[in-house]
Length: 250
Image 1: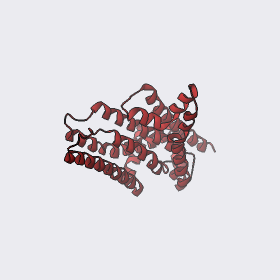
Image 2: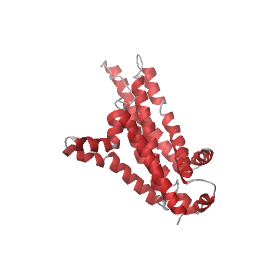
Image 3: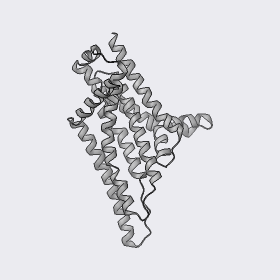
Image 4: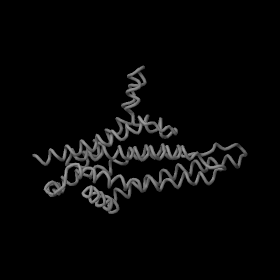
């Protein structure tokens, strides 16, 4: 555990020296801020025209944030292990008194803690909705939305670090991770539209967007969805650890 925490702290601090990490954080906050502004203007327009405004909630923020994380996080995970191989520092890590899984989990944890920073900052937008709305927004819905975001970040980074461990080229890791995310977010659920019964349920369950937008964004916290995201996280970490072990014995 000590080795994992040491690597995590090192990765976390390195992100604050990376222009890519700052760019990802900036894009997330700006786009979510624009969405908040649009919703705010719609509410203001409704109040000026005398129309009954639709009570705001956290769903538009959470939904757009989940989609943006799916597109942007591969830019953060591409360098986690692939960069160590490219720079030749992987050999030093492999000779250190460090287990393979400790390296992978430490890098995942460092990235996870970093991404929680901008995700946590976005809480200011639904909290502003809460102060603007008489009686406040649905707090249970807010908890469901952000629990889904935390689990989605965990799964995205787990899969990302696993793929990064398979490559020595950052661009290859980036494109492979992005392709996997797109398949799991959009494409894997398409067969469910043409199937019924068990086949429909299986492909719906495998769809990232269905698990996130169809459950957590709508305010439904189910054990099966939590297991889904944790399983993806674990699978990515196992793949990454196995890839590092293979490099060790080459």
